[in-house]
Amino acid sequence: MRLYIQPSVISGKTTIPPSKSHTLRAILFALMGEGKTTIYNFLHSPDSFAMIEAIKLLGAKVKIYSTQLEIEGVGSRPSPAEDVIDAGNSGQILRFIGALAALVPTYTVITGDLSIRYNRPVTPLLSALSQLGAFAESSRQNGRAPILIKGPMHKGRAELDGRDSQPVSGLIISTAFAKHQTEIIVHRPGEKPWIDLTLHWLDFLGIKYHNHNYTRYVLYGDGHYTGFNYSVPADLSSMAFPLAAALITRSSITLKNVAIDDVQGDKKFLHALLAMGANLSIGRDCVHLKEGGELRGRSFDINDYIDALPILAVIGCFADGETKLYNGAIARKKECDRIFAICTELKKMGANIREREGGITLSSSNLKGAHLKSYCDHRIAMSLVVAALGATGASIIDGVECTQKTYPNFALEMQQLGANIRVKP
Image 1 (cartoon, rainbow, N blue to C red):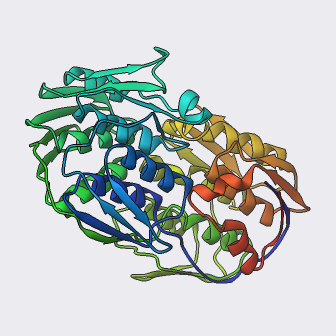
Image 2 (image 1 turned 60 degrees about the horizontal axis):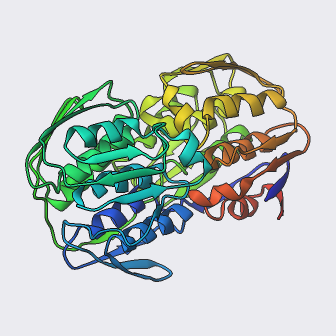
């Protein structure tokens, strides 16, 4: 799908879609519950439906309604997988289901799309599961999907690299249901707020654990709980895009359904905007951006809200002075190499931007319309839409169907806020 975008000013009110990370964890933990779980306000995303198909293959029964999911769980022991599990474009499914598969005494095969098979390394998880006594291999022996997992785990200590939080979260989730106590040692822990998100779910479900400064975890095993009711909060990563669009077009906007007290790490994006000079008012359930406020470049350690790297790069183009985004090397291992992708595309628009190994340095730029591509990455696509709204002249962006992953009606909602966007299949 292709978007044609003219420079526009957006304003008004909009509601942020539900959190992808919470939706996927809710579905996963529903699998492991005893009895029925009801999940309200879930994100209608390809990732969500891929996770649903994955848990069905592991024994869950799922009923899908327009506003809720009803899931009959298996009670702490997944059933042998009935078929190959397709993670689609989801790193969470690859790592989380891959870890849970080590509870099953039969082989589980997990694959995914091109990004999953070539850009999403899974070696840290495979190594840790092997240390715990499970069979865990890459079928092509290259540290990437397809992967083959066979349990059970029967040892109690593993070490892994933690720069990518998903293998750590997956291991924490899996060992919470093991038959014995497990100690997890994490080297170079990163993306800590996403670990906090996983631990928040263990707290919610009453599963005991010990966390020593993100470098050592003790999971006591034998986790169990009954099914639960859960309403998914707004995605604080998705919040960034309409907010940034209003910011760079010097207009006002109100974002509703924003649970600012939620554990999601990307709420730190708001603090970054305040540091840059945005005129923000932050309430308990909404965020209001007012007109005015001169944007100034700043330096940010982006690791705790790594998904905001592409959109902060766009905002930096409209800020006076220099903006530096650092400690973000893990952004190269997402749906695409996001550092390379956003630098390449913004350069097409005339940005004064430099790619670093672990981040980006850029300065105020007069962006011009250009023919751009999304790299099949939802956050790159939406960041480029925002850049195009503030540029001089028209832009074309190819491959924007990927925005369905986290913001299913993104183009339509931007149109309703005043964006001059035409959609072409």
